[in-house]
Image (cartoon, chains in turn blue, green):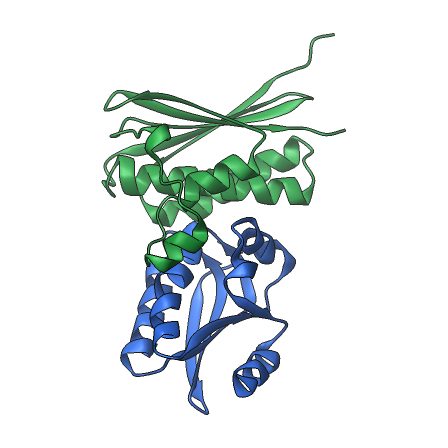
Length: 117
Length: 143
């Protein structure tokens, strides 16, 4: 099966960086949700989700962003999304995510955005 | 001469791990139907959403049940039907709140059917809970 799912997390300068690879659908979204929850439970409120290697996302994956963004914003943090390939960005755009989330070109731009905020 | 209609069917156990196989199936059918990549991507997502709804809501993750995806196409349109024998749903009662409102409420329900209606050219339902539910989705083939 092409595009297996993988997820990596790292912390740099207080930023939690979650890197998604492959596909996030109803089968793999729970792992993504657990990763985000784990970072928040660890006290991280500034999260970058790097989607450069993400080839597909369905509403199950989009729902993870929606579930957590208010919680981190209320505590002064945010979730910023970076590296979306056009196919995946289209799915975000259909639901109007560009009005709710900051979407950056790459991880460096997302880090700069947090540094400036 | 009448257009030749081609039919393909995939039947899989009701498990989310089969969604990747379902997406490959509809992608392959979309290519045969000469849809372009952008339209195939929409088809792939719409059918994934429909099948995920069946697996999670109609069958409640009961892997002993089956989800069927039936595809038929001719020169003018590709029709995909997702068929189940589960609980069914009431299309008019699907959450219509804005994404902004859902975010405020920390909820994410109802996005799937919203995506399906946006991605496909025609969407219709035949709902007989516990007997047979069919969600029909049509994509017009542009020449």
